[in-house]
Image 1 (cartoon, one colour):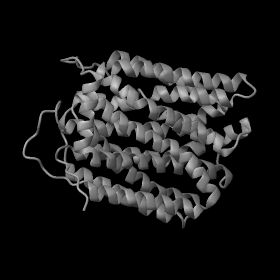
Image 2 (cartoon, one colour; image 1 turned 120 degrees about the vertical axis):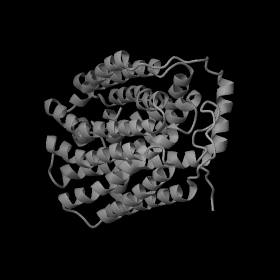
Image 3 (cartoon, rainbow, N blue to C red; image 1 turned 180 degrees about the horizontal axis):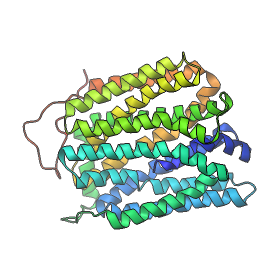
Image 4 (cartoon, helix red, strand yellow; image 1 turned 60 degrees about the vertical axis):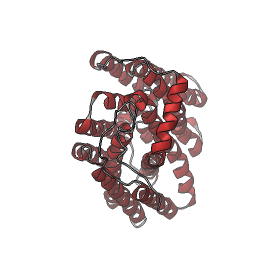
Amino acid sequence: MTLGNSMLIPILPRMQSELNISPFQVSLTITIFSVAAALFIPIFGYLSDRFSRKVIIVPALFLYGIGGLLAGVAAALFTSPYIWIIVGRAFQGIGAAGTAPIAMALTGDLFKGGEQSKVLGLVEASNGFGKVLSPIVGSLLALLIWYGPFLGFPVFCIISIVLCIFFIKEKKKKKEAPPIGKYVKGLFSVFHQEGRWLFTAYLAGATCLFTLFGILFYLSDILETRYDTVGVLKGVILAIPLLCMMTTSYITGSKIGKNLKKMKTCIVIGFFLMTASFATLVFFTQLIPFISVLVVSSIGTGLVLPCLNSLITGSVGKARRGFVTSLYGSVRFLGVAMGPPVYGWLMEWSRKGIFYSTAGLTLLVGLLCLLLIHAKESSQEKDENTTTLFKKFQLTTE
C-alpha cells in the first residue's frame, strides 16, 4: 500500500515537465489515490467484518495492479495521458482501501495481548519500510522511463497476491455476522462510549501522515530546484527520514506491550519531538543539517503511529474491528491526500510559514492527546465481542 504514493514522490517534478501540467495538477496524482482510498476503506472494512479479511485483500490487490497498469500504458501510448493517469490512480486508491487497513484488522484477529502490540509495531515498521524503499525503487524505475513506477505496481501486486493466497491462514468465523442494522447499532454504541478518544486518535494519525507527506513533497521539490539532486541519490535522501521512522516504529511496537500509560507517553513525546523539529527547520537551509533536524520529526512519528495502531485495533471486538480500523485508515489516507496540495500552496506563500504552521498543528494535536487521553486501569476485562478492550481509557475534558 505504501508504494502507492511514496514511489511517485521522486518523479513528480519530472511528471510535471513531461505532461506540461501545473504543480497543483501533479499533486492530484497523490490526492486522488488517497481520497479514493479514504472513501472506500469503510466499505471494505464492513465487508471484511461480514465475510473475511482475505476475501477482500486479494481482489483489492488485483484492482490496485490494474490501476497502475492503466496509468503506465496511458503514459506510454497517449499524447495527453493525464486524465487516464488520474483514472488509474483512482482505481489504485480503491484497491489500496482493501489492503493495509484490512491487514491491520487481520493482525488484531490473529494475535492477542502483548504479542498483538509487537506484531502491530512490525506492521507499522513494514509500512515504514515500504516508504523507505519506495523513493529508491521509484527513482530506479524512472531511470528506465519516467512512468516506470506505474508499470512496477502490477509486479508488486502479483507477488503480494501469491503470498496472501498461500500464506495467510484465517481463523474460521464461529458464527454468522450480524445484519447491517444490528452492526451499525453496535458501531454507534462503540463510538458513543469511546468516541472522544477514538476521534482524537484518528486526528493524531491523520496529522502524522499529513505532515510526513507534505514535508516529503516539499523536500522532493527543493532537492531538484535548490540542490540539483535527481535520480537514485534523490531517492536515497528521501528515504533517510523514512528509515528512521521505520526503525523507531519497530522498536516502539516491540516495547509497549499493552501498557496504556506507556502508549500515551510515547504519543505525547512523539508530537513534542515533531513540534520541536518543525519549528527548528526554519533556521536551516544547508541540506545535511536540514535532513538531520528533519529526522527528529520522523522519530516522533515512529513513536506515535504504533501506539495508535494498538489503541485503535484493540478498541473493539473482532466483530466490528474491520470497520473501526478501516475508518482509521481512511483518515490516514485523507492526511496523505491533503499533504501535497496544502504544502504546494504553502511553498508559494512562505518557507517560514510552512514550518511554523506545521509546528503549530503538531503542538495542538499533541496537547489534545495529552488532555483527552487518560490511562486508568480497569478492575476487570470484559468480553471482547461485546465491549471494548480499551475501557481502560477514560477520556475527559478539563
